[in-house]
Image 1 (spheres, rainbow, N blue to C red):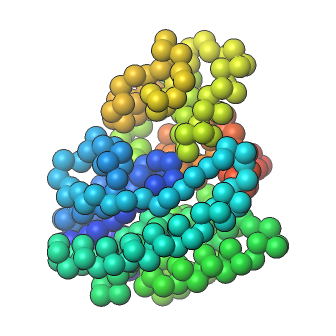
Image 2 (image 1 turned 90 degrees about the horizontal axis):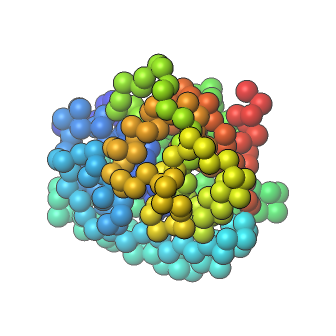
Length: 304
């Protein structure tokens, strides 16, 4: 089953609450599914809902609690996740029961989970959306990779947001297309626009991800004193000079600044990599300290 094959269905989808990259890439997918006459139900938190509502008016929202992530800001993501292991697994188990109730209450036909391991239902087809068939683990972290693969194999289908030549995620998405693993190509909210060929804007700094790491990127940029002709797109809760901040929190308004930008400065997250494929502008990327996925993607695309 591919996204293009889903038509006239009631589709339930939920993005992971790790930053807003998962919401961002789901916007392109949701837009495609709506164009195929599907009814879309989104299980998400309030902040995620506000973003979806910038793009769509015909969705049904179900208030759904995210995973209990906590980050120290020291770059030790493996340890941060390990200390939250019990809370995370408890939330996933409860989530499966919640999904079953949503399916029955709303007569859902298909469940789509953007990297939420517990968001599935045995009653109907459940799809896991990812770009990481393989995790960027060290040899002694093999249990994490085993756990990841075991959980995603619980889904009937796995959609990998990459080409079957692993063009965007490299070794992270490398695997074999099979009956239950499908490479569906890149997705981005910028698929909704006619991207201008002529870039008439300056530089846009996109500050995203967990807030403690977002502030670190912002502080690093401001300390360089390279602030001329720069617009900052970020959460207003961060400590940002008012004269640089694009204050409108409507993502549609922010998108216009990004679409015109000659250069984008951002983290090297996978959603950003896919966005840049559609934006076709210059980019200056930085990996979040200790997040090996971003470190790998930064190196991969620097070599191309």
